[in-house]
Amino acid sequence: MTGPQGIFLHGRLRAGSSMFGEISEGMRVRLKEILQGKEIWALGAGPDLHEAWILLSLGAKRVWSVDKSQRFLGSSTNKVQTGSGYEILDFRGYFEEFFDLKRGEDNTQVITFLKWPQTNFTPGLIDLLGLSQTIVYVGKNDGATACGSPQLWGYLSRRELQEEIQSCKNDMLVYGGVSPIEYPPRCREEKEAPRF
Image (cartoon, rainbow, N blue to C red; front, side):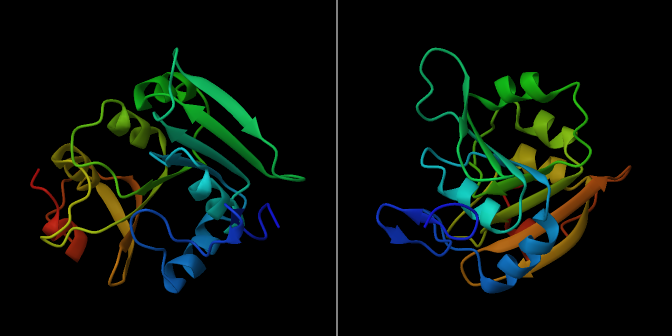
């Protein structure tokens, strides 16, 4: 089986695990509500499109899988056949190249999905987040592991924190609009994040 109803990769059905942790059942339920019928930008999604298929199975209408892996001579976009009414767009390029592609468009309904972002500064990431009305972060900062750069956490400290779902492997944070003030750390994940 392939497509939004089930994720079939490498000969077996996979339930939502990836290289770093899993999406818990509580996160899955909430993501179904958040992603329903929306366009998603899965930033740093990896080369195998597994994350894009998961996001489609959770209700997304269109997923842009954005990753620099397998980028050869400049950026490229490939459309993946998924079935009626659903779409995966596989963008191979840097975040700043994707920003150049998307700026100037109406991105008010876009949700940006960040799962285990890199701890080093990533050019173009903050610019992309600025185009998105909603940001969903999944990762873990607990002293033994770290997600996101100090610049990322500095930016997120100026976004409205709408929701936090904790689990032993990952925490999920949902951010809304930009705030005129910078908030002190508001949740476990922000408190353990690399200092900004």
